[in-house]
Amino acid sequence: MKNQEFRSMQAKLTVGAVVVMIMLLSAPPLAAHHAFASEFDSNKPVHFTDATVTKVEFINPHSWIHVDVKLPDGTVENWAIEAGSPNILLRRGITRDTLKVGQKIVVDGYQSKDSTHRANGRDLTLPNGQKLFLGATGTGAPYEVQRPGVDTEKTEK
Image 1 (tube, rainbow, N blue to C red):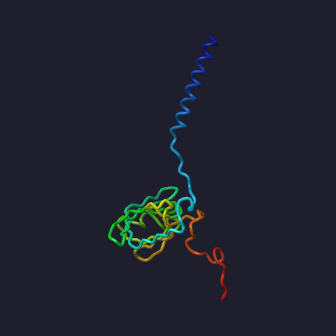
Image 2 (cartoon, rainbow, N blue to C red; image 1 turned 180 degrees about the vertical axis):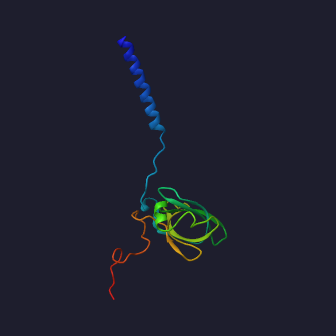
Image 3 (spheres, rainbow, N blue to C red; image 1 turned 90 degrees about the horizontal axis):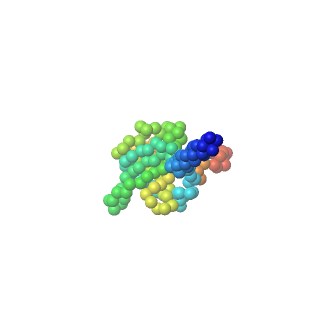
């Protein structure tokens, strides 16, 4: 009787171990937060004066603004512009209603190192001239505005 109980317990433990292994192997990978320099090149600035919003994604860890960019030769390229997290954007006054599909904007940022149509957004200018900062601080990206006494030395008059 004891031998049969041992085999039953051993079978349950084996099934349990198999279930745990299946769960571990089928778990989706976690998206890692990255530093600016790991994906983008500060020596490859982009400046799109005629960008049209095609899609806006307020997702973590970074939001994305997809734009069609008209090139001088008349062709159109779709670019994905990485922005800060939804929380950071909301604190800067950028809401889901700030950008609309079809809206014309100006975008400044830095192209991806792999030269694809992805960029880390820095500044966005709305049709009314309002400038908004898109980036996340502490990622190694060039800072949006120099802060007196922090990024620059104070000048006394």
